[in-house]
Length: 359
Image 1 (cartoon, one colour):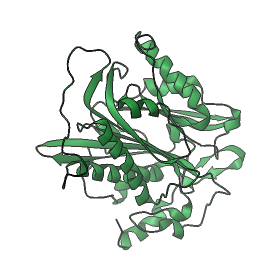
Image 2 (cartoon, helix red, strand yellow):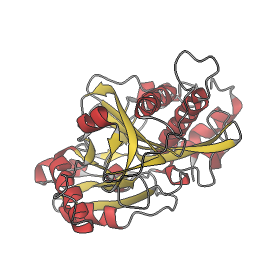
Image 3 (tube, rainbow, N blue to C red):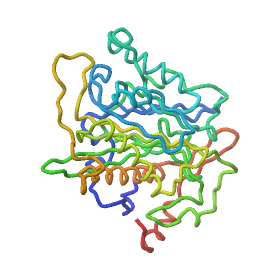
């Protein structure tokens, strides 16, 4: 069951039909889980394709933001310089960044003979440290697992919780993982979708907030013997016509969504965010001028700017995506007898429904 299935929600904007990042037309998500017992691997890969075509040929506008920088997201320098995303986004564990980079290059060069010839492939690979459950010393996630996630991506509602890159991650001392949500906004006569996908691996138990209530302080059972501060990778997709700097501003708002759940961007945590728009395809080679449609009044000095609605959408969807990861994840056993318990939603629900929520 997802967060809304318990009668809970976040904010006031309506979700899309799937309440997922794949509500944005063309966006595809694929998972592949890497699970072995000797040695103990509790890891995997999650791949997000920005559209249903070839992103090396048809790039999209993008922007990135870092809330706390103890982490790695490859390809950020190119996006910050050009404002373009030309590859799928791949999420994995910290040990596997290099394999993930090679996997994307290999996949795209087999897909398109121009990749690596006309220009190099610049993958976006982002990591979380799943070393509490996963034995990082035993090796990286194999290239074949990355290829599986890339090849099996679909527009279906993505699986959530302990799956793909979220197989070994933690959330406020409970089992975390992948979560996703979406919002629909109306600007003028048109509707746009904003979708968010997160890999949650952050927070201490006492920091957890649910609907503004200090739930983490009420829960003291099942505490792990120790925990790393972790990370959160946030991916925002939208079909609203936005320019790269506007997308960077959307990426920033993922952090505000995490704040609603209790995150403070802990010192040893890496909160790395990327946002892209599918509204404008930027061909690698073309003699045709680019379309110029964009939200020109989405600048900071415009009172009542419509981009505020997109900010609302990112914040709400980011928070709900975290909660979806939390309630969808199941108890997972890992290396050295380590266990991350499922969040006890059934025990907490009576408190959440009987007390006035803060947000």
